[in-house]
Image (cartoon, rainbow, N blue to C red):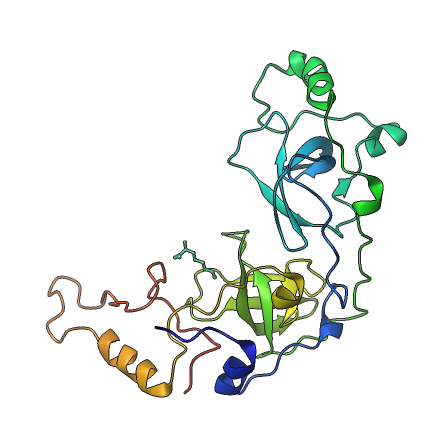
Length: 266
Ligand code: MLZ
């Protein structure tokens, strides 16, 4: 059985340092999540940020909320932290400011049925009380990240996942988030004050699951074995000798592209 992932051993193994907490726009203590499934909130439509819609909490993970816009489908759920101030609000916030609630992009019904739909969706609904919305942490004054530092980051292609990651590069206010053991397939650039990145230990502290690095992180012997197994067969296809399928012993979905910056060189 594979050993269970823990940051302490992994950092030693990589001789890497975690990005210090001051790098992140996150509270030092993760906020409490008092939202419950079924509660309704106002949310900006992620596909149309000028619209405020009604959303229902359809799931929670640690301090994160899984949201679905009322009147939309179940294919466009999105995640927000309970301390996201500008994208989620208590029901009533929009109207208090003279705004009007809008149907989501891809509203299932005819636009003319929106007013009645809105009335019905809010009738007898459990709305999330104002006090459970947490205040947003301040942004760090500048980009303190350095190449090679470890962190935990949302996988934007699988946004329910927070995974072990490394700062692959820094450029002005941007950092390159590279996912350990996934060969670049999920990497992205984001601002240093993104809410999708967290210090090492945040998942453990907040009760959120952490996806460990892909592939191998056992003793060096097992990694060596994995590499030997990864060597392509001597008689590769005569048609296209340059395209060698990388036989993968570990994870199913990793692509045979560039080697992960985080795990190379050992
Ligand atoms: N379904 C995918 C998830 C990969 C997640 C990678 N995160 C960096 C797989 O298991 O291949």
